[in-house]
Amino acid sequence: MIRNFRPGDGAALRELCIGSITRLGSRCYSPDQIRVWRDRAPDGAIYEQRVAKGAMIFIATDERDFPVAYALLEQDGYLD
Image (cartoon, rainbow, N blue to C red; front, side):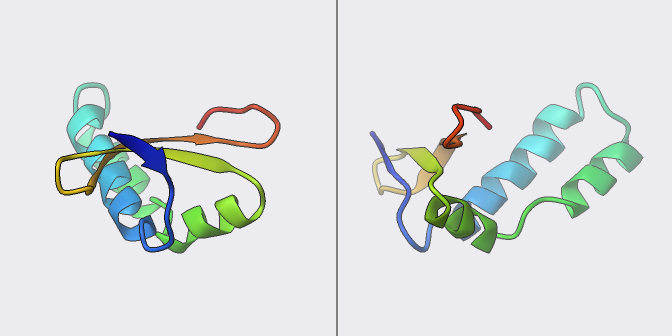
């Protein structure tokens, strides 16, 4: 299922971001590069701030409605 971002989703999106960095990043980046990138992962609150500023976040969920992937669309059309 795909749904819009809801308050409280930020922590799960942070974990998705970190998981992508560590699992997918290991294919192309050194452990040191991954560590630096992972340590710079946004706090969950940033997602709520971006939505408040007009961004749209679409979330794919599992059968328990837990976020498993997301796409962030900025007001200017930039897809993050």
